[in-house]
Structures are given as structure tokens and as C-alpha cells.
Image (tube, rainbow, N blue to C red; front, side, top):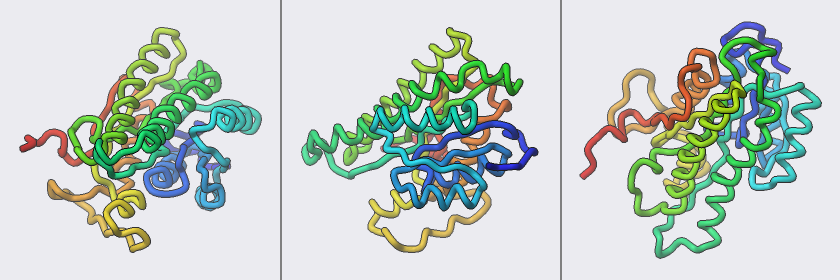
Length: 263
């Protein structure tokens, strides 16, 4: 386990889905750097263990579409860690097909991974996250769901993905309101990344297996891709007490993409 006692997430237990690569890996690394003990979950369990080993964390196999596996993981989290303070529902997929090309099976696959996976994560994490502020003090527990700017804009070649990400954004508001009304001390927000240089983006752009594009430091032009760390920093903020007054939001992390006029 992470023995870092410093940082704004010191003493917190975090679980990240799809944590073996891309955004999920960056999230795990940043949460650990901020002092959290991180549980890396992924279907690629060997890769999950590699990430966990690199941050002195824990790793578990998880297919987010499986209710049984979610139950097993949360039982293990309870037994090993005694509770959960941060849940990052990051696992995702994308298949580029327009509405005429997209099969019902592919449409349902997107909904299963994104919407059902996020629903199951929230449902089975809540018992471990309730009233954790009474244990840790501070601003309470935090759920961070991964939406997308695709849920805020019209992209004609990914109707299944946009539908799924839109569902995550709406569900986030519902869960945030419910937890607040119940007095659980759990905030629930979503991030909506734009184009980020990840293995998934590289794959759909025909660059699978290549070296990731170098994302320079400093201000980026309007058409630039972001670095996974650009999202991970926002995850760490929402996980922390610094964000205790943010709840039920979907926050674009897109270098101003959604703010621009679209022609």
C-alpha cells in the first residue's frame, strides 16, 4: 500500500476502473502522488498489477459490465481496506460508426461499458463510501465519472458513444442529488475530456502501437490534443477537499473546445 502520509489525499482509499493504461493509469499515478492508497482495476489484470506495483498500490481484475465482479471487488475492498473514499469510473471504449453503420450489439456494448459500468460502480461503492468524513474528517467522499465532450457536442460518427457519455452526465446529477439528500457525505461529479493522447485515441486515429505524440508543456493551441495528466489533475482536484463545494457537475477538460462556436 502507498505509505505516503503527505498530500491532500493522504489517508484516502481510491479505486480507478480501466486503470491499466491511458487516462486510468494517469489517474492512478496522480492520486497516489497526492497521498491516496490506490486500487487499480482493469480487465487486463497483469497490466493493472504493473501499474499498482509502480505506485505501491493494490490491483484487482474487473470487467465493469459484470455485476458479480463489482460485488466481489467491493467485498475485497472492504476486507483489505475497510472502506472507500474515492471512486473513478474511468473504463470506456469507442467504435467509430455512424447511426446507419452501428449495429444494435455495438450500441448496447457502449451502454454496457459506460452507463451500466458506471451505474454498478456507484451502486456497489456507496455502502463503502457513506459517512467516510466521520472517519477521515474533511469534505467527504468523491465519485468522479468520466463523460466526454462528445456528450456536449454533435459528432456524427459516434452515436453510441455520445449516447453513453450523455447518460453518464445525467446519471451523475441524479446520484449527486440523492447522496446529498441522504446526508451520505458523498459528492458525485463528471469530467468531459476532449481529445487526449491515449492508446484509445491513438487506435481510432490509425496510430495503434506507435509512440505517443509528445504533448509539450505550457499553453496549447486550440486544435491540440491534451496529455492524460491534464485530466488526472482534475481528477485529483475533484477527489480532494478543495472541491467540497462542487457537486453534480459535468466539467469539460477540453482546452476550450466546447466554448468555441461550431460551424
